[in-house]
Image (cartoon, rainbow, N blue to C red):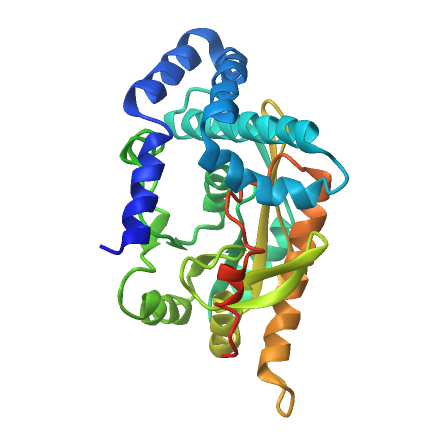
Length: 311
C-alpha cells in the first residue's frame, strides 16, 4: 500500500467511529430528525477546534467561496459547512433505514427518462461532492435502470458500515477505479449495455485532470467522464442535489452535455471547454448553497496542477 493511501485511511478512521454513529442512531430513533441535528452543533465545535486536517481541507473551498472574509468569519463558515454535512449524513442513514420520510423531487425527470429510453449507448451521470447522493440514487430508482457507481471503497469502516457505503443494492452496483485501467473496460461495457454509469467530476482520485476556472481561481478537474462519453457516443447528465428544508430535497438532472470531438480542433482545448462547462454549473450551485459543497480537498494546488497534462 502506498504511503499516501495508508495515511489517508488512518486519517479517515479518526473522523467517526462505531460508537459515535450508534449515538446518532439512538438520538434519531428517540428524538427524531431535528433532535439528532441538535447534537451536531456541539460535535462540530470539537472538529473545528481540534481537527486541523478537516479544517484545512475545508478552508481551501471556503477561502475561495468567501474571498473577502477574514479568519474568524471563515472559521464560522467552516463550522456551518461541518454542520450541514452532518445533517446530510444523518439524512442518508434515515433514508436507508426507513426511519424518516423525505420529499425528494427531481428537476428534469422527464428529460432523463427520455434519454434513458432513447440512448443507444447508455448515460454517464456526472456527480460532484454536492448534497446527498444517497437521496439522488434512491429517486433515480424510478428509472428502472441499474446505476453503476465508479467509486473507491470508503476508508472509514464505521462510516461504511453505518451508511452502507460501497454496498451493492438491486439498482446500484459498484465499479472500483482501483482495478486495472481504472475500470475503463468495465465502464465501456456497461455503457454498451445501455446502463447508467455514475462518475465523480470534481476530484480526480489519481486520474488526469485539466485546468479550469473555478470560484475565481485556477483549479484542476478530472476529464475522464468526458473522454469516455466522447468515445462511447453517450450523453452526460450532471447530477446536483440540494437540501431545501429539513424534509425536502431537490435532485437536479436537467443539465445535459454532449461531448463529441470535432475533427481539426485541439483535443485538449475541447476537453477543457467541456470540463469548464461542468465547473460553471457547479460554481453556480455553490453560490446558491454555499454549505452544501463537501469537497474537503484542495483542487487548486500545484499537486493537482501536475495532473493536468495533455491527453
